[in-house]
Length: 535
Image 1 (cartoon, one colour):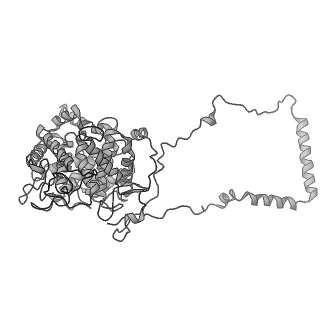
Image 2: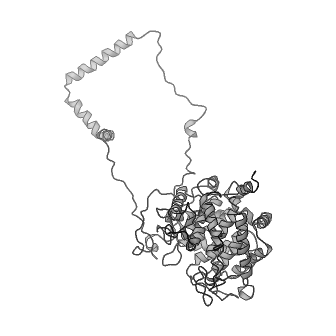
Image 3: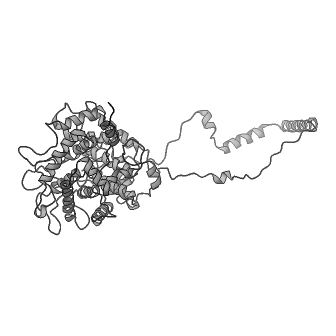
């Protein structure tokens, strides 16, 4: 897979072309002096003497004719109580000196472009962050991304632990059985972590007693596998600083920070060429880094989290989307992961460029129809039908996080579309009765939970009970899921597990069962108003 050619660096600018009057102001002083010297020497000596005596006579006249009582004007110099000049200080701390205003042109084709490793320096040190943490936090509640909960972004993850978690679990429809499944999934994921802290979609590799069935074949996507495996731990409130999985999370984060693809002037890149890790991977890893920072405010994670977001901003296409490689025209699927990463950044007070968010919103406009209720993949869907339901779920969730309200017509119509009896959760087919599409289910479940109400209650019971029933409970597979025939598990009932395999299915299913407390409800206050509306 090829990368993007950066434009040549501009180290100097051509001379500015101004008017004759403007240019005259900047003529070399030496030339002006020579002009005065030539003029002086061309004047006759008698004329010089005449002018000198005339000026002397005028001076004497002024002296004798002035008013006797008039005091001469005097100027005195002194010191002020306030040393104004000493007190003038220019504060550069709020300036983002890393941002570049250089426009990067879109690359028309990536087939013939050189590899990213050939055009970007390896292990280039990123300058220290200019913004302080306090300054970042002051920006956390501004901009286009919707952040609910407390005043700062950290309140968004406040439901993941303690009594708050138990309360949200009860209120939003979780059960003791669904929590047991989450705990078993975390145990399975922890058992399949590799010694270097990473995970592999081929979960069968590595020491110890391991599950051998349905390994994924995206074996080079180590960053994506590690980021995806970390997300369920973070969703359950476990960080690298506390909890029984602290070492698991710490080792996973360390692997990501120490083994990122390339450090570039445009941020920390987890994108690698040659189909190793793409912008899917970068988005997933960015979510993990930003959530871990949001939950702990650990300075060790601030630069990697901010750097990963900076690369997302750099990689955006001019029309607002993202796809497999930087600057490629977008698709809704990859866009969803990047917007979720930007939201996770906002949660922790990481700086996000609002114009990047605005362009992403314009991309969603271009791929949607019916007031933004139905979404296509690369362009607008030709009609409203079931084949675009995954893109619709992704688009609707992005719209929610970009600030659309619960009563917005696109949200209402889109939720009706997803909850229609002919659709609902995707829990298999006649050919593959256990072939749940967890990619669709993961996004759509978040949409329905955020929307709330009877439609969510119906959806939740169906989705929750299906996952509880279909978790593997015996042997090395205990605590995991695999859905043959589902998205990213396309190989069918036997053999391998498609691109992501059992690891992918387990992480996505666990996060789906964490939906009750993973994020604060976006429409909580509005939902209360609806429930108690005066009639």
